[in-house]
Length: 245
Image (cartoon, rainbow, N blue to C red; front, side, top):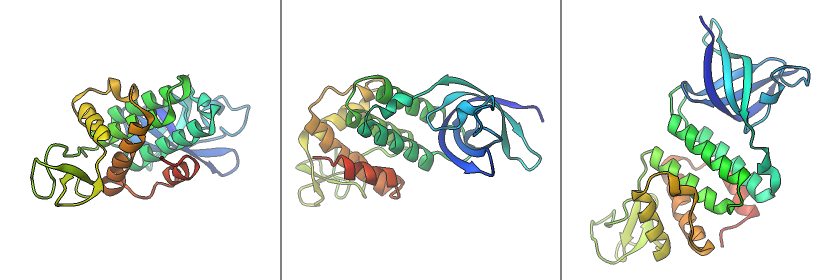
């Protein structure tokens, strides 16, 4: 079989045998795949640069007889090492990779998720944007790509369009005062309504108070836990280190 060429982002690495590593790569054409990378832990290996998360570039892969992927060559196109400029940015980046890995299906192309993740890592590593603002943009984008869109204009329990002052993540949207739920922050509601109708571009450019970002994160993360996955260790660590006020 001819080698495969594809662009991809390393989202997880694990030591394997002596100098080898197993990579989890989100690729443009083959979705999330596991790639064995022989010898890359050695500094002398030509593909040594691929042996860490946040590496983006062109992969040349060999498909073995049993259908597995093995790395032949890696050409780096972008590193995001500046994410380590602060503990807040670093932990947020680790959460991005964790969430990306959790929601990406095996070997099913999802180029929009790759593009969204690369954009988020760019803003996190190479701009002075608040990590929480970047995190909110990424979470909204992930929910949108996953088809999880909060109902923000009518009560998800009774259908009422009046007194929408609560939020029920498990039900997928806002609720009226009679149907209960978390208290709905008005500024957060307005921000969610805005991003629900806008394109991806403004997701990482929120010009709103920190308090509004914090309030909105409660709703997006409630939706992620209730609708997508609840086993997010890096998010728990992020909450412990930098609690939402």
